[in-house]
Length: 368
Image 1 (cartoon, rainbow, N blue to C red):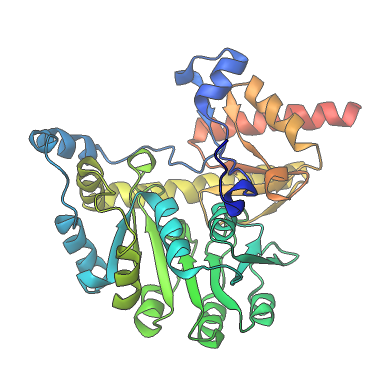
Image 2 (tube, rainbow, N blue to C red):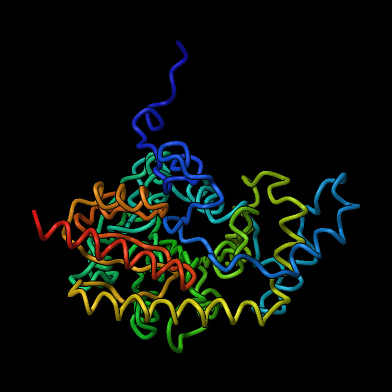
């Protein structure tokens, strides 16, 4: 038998949201009829510009993609007012997080993680034989920046900071974030995973300025959420030239495909679609808040395209009841949040259906 190295043998398997195919086969729904509200995907789809751009450029599909993503890089240089050397592209944030682990986490290094947060941080840390230091969220489910600062030691190498945080939807107040970054030692890498930053409700700072002013900060962005390009798998990081140079040493030479580059560029050029997604998301979140209040349910106001709500009922049971009705949501137990549900924001008719099912589940629970 060929044995895997110890760090991989003991690695917990990453658990993604239940897939449409899985639920379809278990409950007998046609895949097209299922409503997936478990993976924080964009239920408004993507810009119609994307399909047109791909069709217009299909003559290039037989060539290898541009390894430098030149056109997309130029667009992002303009958007963020950075140098092209401050950018790296990845096969979604998953790959960028993995690269960071390979470059900056070694055996025995301490890595600080907000608990709960995005699960892949743990896999990346453990795979590279790092030690995970968990800092629980606050009573309001916010990131405990003071708690993180208190855990920093001379062995700390990386801080994973999901902002807004997944699965809680909370965002670190701007002044607090600036103060936090200033207080972290310069030899500790702060990974600002900002997949949901476009959904922040209200004015916020331009966090790229934190990258420009601190050589130990990297900002990760994705085209999966607001732009609706999750299946294309494309994201990017913004950091100092030294950090980018080190990450490029371990990056696959060709890691993002041509269609993804074209799709991302076309999506960025459709500001009307982008703005409508954010507007619609906020409107539907307010619908959820109103309904949760009427049901007397505790919830966490969200700065993402999902919402966390407490039912007090076993999550496995609730998740299965929703699946029987053709809707896929995610139980909080997967994040260590017993009795909670994480529900991705859908279109209006989908969210109404969610509330109808939830009312039935709560009513049945009261009878028991």
